[in-house]
Length: 134
Image 1 (cartoon, rainbow, N blue to C red):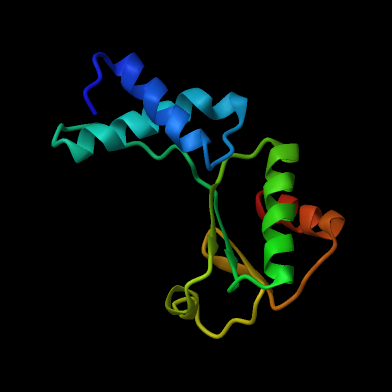
Image 2: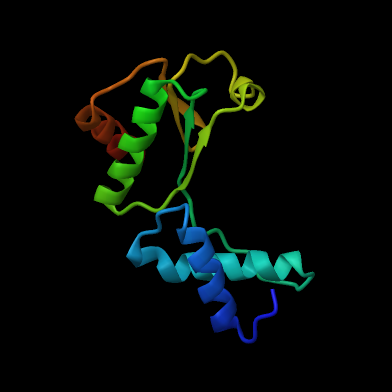
């Protein structure tokens, strides 16, 4: 990227990331700082390490309708609760296997399998997520 100052770099990186990721408005500045730090690391500049996103959420599932529904429900819940999270839908069988014996769909919050092979209604899923993130 041939961008001038840090403000331009943060703006450009944030715009690209927002194309496929939802970022709460309240977390925009934190994300843009984190993206700038990653950019600087990629070009060999030294940066101060800081952990900005503490919540990690993974949906484990190859892409069945139940897995896709859980993904949409969790994204919606994160928006409703204004929670910033490192969110991924893991569809690769080898990556899923790294979590051990799991059935799909599974929900992993901060590296803990909290739902294994079950689909819950959105309202119950929301309660589970709220409870695990207290």
